[in-house]
Image (cartoon, rainbow, N blue to C red):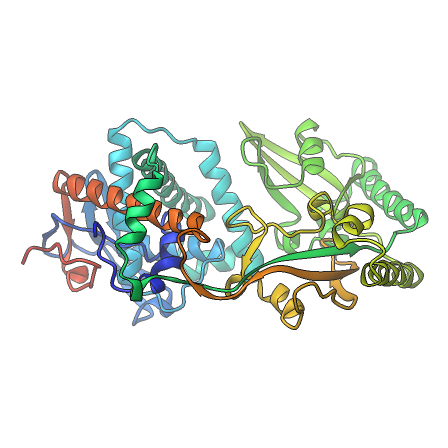
Length: 483
């Protein structure tokens, strides 16, 4: 075979995800590295003890890749960024993160050589978002974060994060260029499958389709108006009386994640992170202006445009979520129980009931079917389904309708749903006809891997690379030290 298959069953998941930019353990091919003496240390720096054997580390040059210098501290900065993006670092070593940095710099170096350009505004917006997420998840203030990672000020911290993001963005664009146009033909797919020994063919787990109907309690108009009036009062107090907007965020906002930042979000026209209604209002404001109350699926907001920096908009907001009455909760539950009974009695199909009554717009037009975010179809592999969803359907037989389940909407208010499982296909060894699309995906990924390996083998031989003494004992996926 073009790619040796020791146990394809255990590598399916890796092959499916191998080209994501933040894949920490992506295989590192380092072919022309020179071992040099350690560079002179430049400073002492705290490091993440979960990825290091000591609390302090001497910061020095760890490696040189083309025009890029990698410092020991770059590994620590990378840890911060990965945590901010929610990546799990369990079992990850400094050597593995260092190897990923080497790979990023290799791609970035050649991206520059190939005149690939990335957006400065987009990268800085990414940094803003990552820091906001990290602060929200860690519960720390910016000052505590600076002290933890021994940075003199926020600007230095942001600059360091900027360089990491820029390098990764260049690497991502370079990878896209390498893989651009790579396709797989039916004949290549057939050859790939036939070359897998029968006793090594992958086993595909149980697959099924999941449907749901969601009913949300209705919020009384009086409650909506109460929230709108309260937000209008906040705006008037700031505009007319000089009250502090940030103080009102801390005291009243229901967006708990943004309270540590005073309700701050940085928006970018090219990166729509917030819901459409929020973005449209934010981008229509003048600097220093506060919006009237705006409704989104999360509740009602007032938005304060604090500063415009090119394509970036620094906004603060206050979110208030209208409360649902006990009577409305009881009414919603009763409505869904009646819908369920009609389905069970055969008066209406689950799909038609979803189109007719479900309050969940994402699935209503699909007849209630959940869409798999990985494959963009209706099929879910049971072992990879969201744990919360699995817990709700694990006891359902095909065609059964669940009892009414209590869930929570995006606003935090209660909602109710019923679920059904259909088109279950039990675990089975790969079959070419039945599993053609999955096999085609594996064959395409193998072809991409070969393209990446070929590019790395060629470019590393042409790239100036040095690695210092500290990392010479790292176990990379291949031994390219040529000792």
